[in-house]
Amino acid sequence: MKQVGALICGWVFAIGLGVSGMTKPAKVIGFLDVTGDWDPSLMLVMGGAVLLGLITFPWVLKRGVPIFGERFILTEKAGVDASLLWGAALFGMGWGLSGYCPGPALVSVVTGNLAVIVFVIAMIAGLGIGQWWIMKK
Image (cartoon, rainbow, N blue to C red; front, side, top):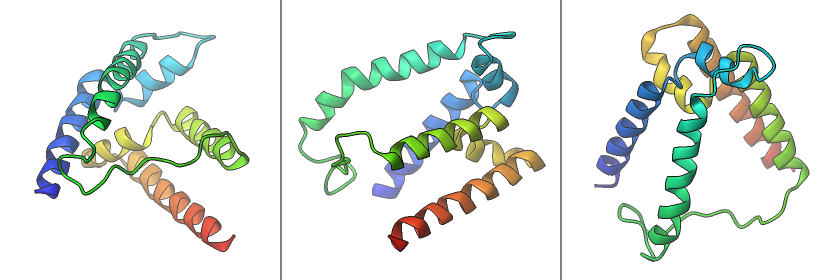
């Protein structure tokens, strides 16, 4: 049942990314280009997601356990450290240079676009290197 829930959530997420335009690098880069031809429409997508999260997250946590899992997995880190800053910087550079965020890139792989495939391969390699770096410490 856990996998069915994950599949349904993944499909809903993928459809939302497609409908919002997040799978189009030009739209994302247009949003990030605040000094040029700025497209603020993705702010509505981001604002809607943040608002929904702010409203539902406390309510969901009151359940004690998730519907399709044994326990909630939440970060125990409360502060900002060098790893968080480096990770955020790398994420932002990758997103700004390519126009792809990890979720929309995975959704866009089905298009067969070579640029998307190269991005996803590089992203997976970067995740692997990051895990190796953490394990090395």
